[in-house]
Image (cartoon, rainbow, N blue to C red; front, side, top):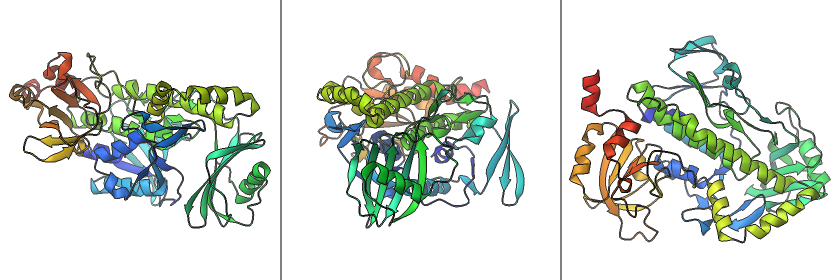
Length: 482
């Protein structure tokens, strides 16, 4: 995802991918509502085929309807991670990303004005020099360790299992079943194939690099459920833990981290993959702006400032869900209390916004309009020329967008100096749009390439100030400065 974002921003990017070929494993089975919107912003959703989203989701196993929050749902379901990886790799390659498989990162040196990495390749050891290095290399990140990032948090207390099993004839347990010896989940993936998650009580934490066997998983399943699945087989098996950690900084000099390299947590609600995708969308345009020379001062530092609090909140909500969902009898009072509270719509809205990631709000400048700092919600628009489009469609090229909702010639003239970085679109809500008007009170909004509203006309500040803050000086001014 980050490689595609960097290419859209005009940066040259090399991806050093340790795996010689994709694993083909399903692993993550979907993504949150906000990650789905992020893919839509780049025109990627059609590549996934028919997507299903469920209005029903859960928090810590307590089910509720996410549509209590407008535009919210429990994300895209049943999309194997292998498909998501294939879609993003093809997209990034089409955009010109240089993806080098079988390249394993070994060492990092930040020279202050450049960063140098040593990689093992099928042809032998190589050295690469680049302006910046981003570690998107997972929970055991080599980049994080080599660059000396601090990674505090809570260690793992238990081991759990994940597998796709064949020929076991399991009944569905979509939201999980709590039993005296643990919790299990099961869901059909294909004819004769089920995804299972097995969370036994009392299983000590183990090194995630240790090999897990189907026999171990089958034994844990039988210990919890009493059902023997040893006659079946597994397409793949894996283990995971409840370790919860986050780096203290997302950037150290010319080295940055994104996704699981920056934060690890109990998988709950499909939030891990989705948060990593959103890290990449937040970082991509900023890093590309820095590399290509138009970034205003401090722009790259806003990556940590904006995404670290999001990661911190993610860790809190997944830890809470783990306590509620996986705890034994001692967690019964928590489950009972949550069941009571979730009957209130305000509580549902809060939890739905948190797990769907639709309630993220960044501090993007002065103002009080409800859209400021929030993502541009999906709406149908009609351009001044009469063409139908969507708010997501305006962001396909990962440029800033100044949405002129009042056919304001002075506004468009003010933005002229940024036309190489910001597209001005005159439009209005489509008359067939029945959802609430998110622009109420604002005749214009400025949207960053990541889809977050950085300015509204309702707040009184001139658009030129916001354009300079997020997109650097106007073209004529920049030329005069050089």
